[in-house]
Every structure is written in C-alpha cells, then in structure tokens.
Length: 466
Image 1 (cartoon, one colour):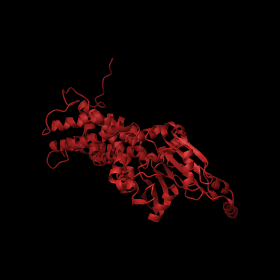
Image 2 (cartoon, rainbow, N blue to C red):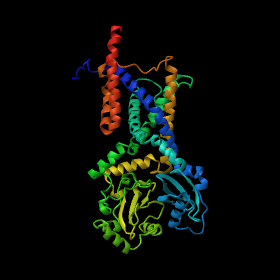
Image 3 (spheres, helix red, strand yellow):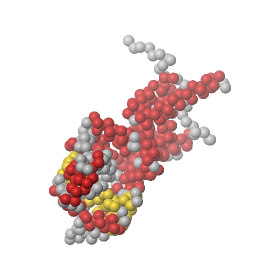
Image 4 (spheres, rainbow, N blue to C red):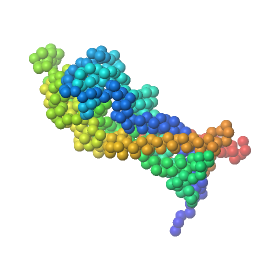
C-alpha cells in the first residue's frame, strides 16, 4: 500500500524543476566566465609540447650533431648567460630538442634553452615560456596564490551545473530536444536544444575534468595529499632527511616531479647523514677530508645506470653533496618514477614509482594523467578537448537563450520556488559536495541559505500585497 505524500513536505514536480532551474541559472552566472577561460587555456595546454615547438621553435628545436656536450656545460652556460643559479635541468627524450635549465636570479626564475650539441644558450623565457603563462592562467595563479582557491570553488559549482543540467534535460514527455536539436538558430528552441544535447554528451567529461582538477587547488589538493599520506593511502612515507644542526633537508618542489611526490623531502645524502650529529668544527674537518661532491655529469650517468634511459627532470640539491632528484614523467602514469641520488657517491637513496603509491595517490595520479591528455595518447587529448569545446558551446548557447527570453532591463532569473520542499533534491547534491570539498561546501551552503532567507522575506510581502 503506497503511503500518502504529505503536501507540506512534498513539493509539486513543477516547484522542484523551478528550484533546479534557478540554481542551474545562478551556478552558470557565477562560474561560466571563469569556466570558459579555464576550458580555453586547458584545451591549449593539452597540446603544450606541439604548441611549444611552434611558438618557441628557434629555442626548442635544434639540429642534431655528432655528439652532445656535458650536463655540467649546460648548467654553466645557463648560469653564465643569466647570472643566476641553476635549480633544475630538463633533459629531453628527443634528440632534436634543447635542454631546459631553470635558473633563479634574485628570487625570480627563468628558463634557459641550451643547445645540447654546441652548449650555446639559445635564449631565455619565463618558466615554461608561453605555455607556462597559459598554465598559470588556467590555474588562476597569475592573479596571485589566493585566486588559486577559486579553482576549487569553480570546479565544485561545475559539478552542480552538470548535476542540475541532467535533471533539467531529463525527458518529461517531449518529443524532441533529447538527443537532437530542433528548429533554427533564429529561435530560442534551437539554442535550448543545443545547450541540453551538448550537456548530455559532454557532461561526464566536464564533471571528470572538474573532479580531476581538484588536486591543483591550493586548499583541497594540499590537504588531501597530507591526509592520504598519513593514512598510508598516498605516497610512501619518506625517510626523515636531516641536515646538520637538525635542520630538515630542502623540500622538492620540482615541476617534473609527480603530484604525489611534490612535497617529498629527499632522503639524506651521505654527507648530510654523517654530519648530522657533529659540531661545527668536526663537521668542517670531515668535509675537508671527504672527496669532492659529484657533479652533474656523474649524477646523470648514475641516473642513466639506474634505468632512466629516456628524458627526465633533474633537480639540483640546495647544498653541495646533497640529494639530487631525477624524475621520469612518462605519458603513461604507470611509468612514473623518481630516483633520489646521493650527491657524495651517487648511490640510489630511494627509487619510488607508481607501484609504491597508495590507492588514493594512484587514483589521483591516474586522473591527472587523463586530465592532461597523456594517459591514452591522441584519443585522450581529443576527448578532453571535446569537453573544453563543449563548455564553450554551452556557455554561448546559455547566453543566447537568456538574451532571447529576458525582459528588457531585468536579470530574468528563473522564479523562486514557493514550496519549502522544493530544495530537498538540491540538498542531495549540495551536502556531499560540502563534506568532500570544504570551500565548495561553504559557498554552496551560503548560497542556499541566502536563497531560502530571501524567499522567506519576499514571499510574505507578495502574499499580502506589500
């Protein structure tokens, strides 16, 4: 026997639809401009290697020669040309590409492009060149670190857009506009169908991009990395790296290091370990008697011997004899690997790969690889690009729809539901997001409460004719 619905708590279908439509409208109003910017820059960044070779061709592409000069020569040339100190060297896999040396000068970083055959510096750019700028725009870091927090909020509201959009699309007896587009561009119906059908086919990809973009957010990404590591679900716990006087070893923040390892302190080198418990005089005497630290030539040879036969990123230690990090960033996430080398004798202190990650780190790294279009080759790039194009199609169609139906001089937001139970379905979407993504939850709950408060304040006046 079916229970009788309580009219006080069960909202009519039209009221529920209106609640979803209203939130879909406001979610789009709040995030569409930023989401479209992120889709544009993200679509370009999918092809960063190809575009870099075009935009910076004189710096990136080199003629192959009979033999390459040494890594030490590359570093010296970059430091001489810029007057700075080398921090990182990107050794390319392709033999017709230049070596990238990240150099820091007075706190500012730049990239020097070195011909590996002649050892000549071909030029310099800001870190990453044009694609580095696009990446900073995509992450909103170009407007400052605080703006990176907005990435999490925008991604969360994008999930709300997709969820409410699927509800609004759901067939309710209509004969068209489900998987086909009706009418002509002059009619609002055409743009409504284009918006709905595009969302149907691309909504999953857009939601995937939003979720897998969360690890780069300034708040959620950092917190999840720490929580999963402490729980044993993230990256392996590294050995404690201590320098002399008990100061911790420098944290690796190399751009070529996997997400799960970007805050990993490198294991201590032999020089750091042996000097940890000595006083200044004894440590000084030990350093005088110890052999000279290995240079980049020897470290690269050790990295090659350890199995890094392709291209990799080499992060230099902050102190002589410290730990070097060689990170192989393959397109396939399963081949992700970071090798830590002793700067004193070249021993492999740690060799951490995807196989060593916990389940959370594996899932996040896989999501990042697919997000960036690397995991499954060209088809991966094209699917992610389709999601970016779909964002623009839906953004443009939403603007045209609104423009065609709006009363002149008004915002024309969908009417506010009058039934108090109309928001029950929305809570089923909002509450899980509020728990999973705190910043998103705060903004969603604030918006929901504001809408409910305004409804209570305005509705009685409307009923009394005030």
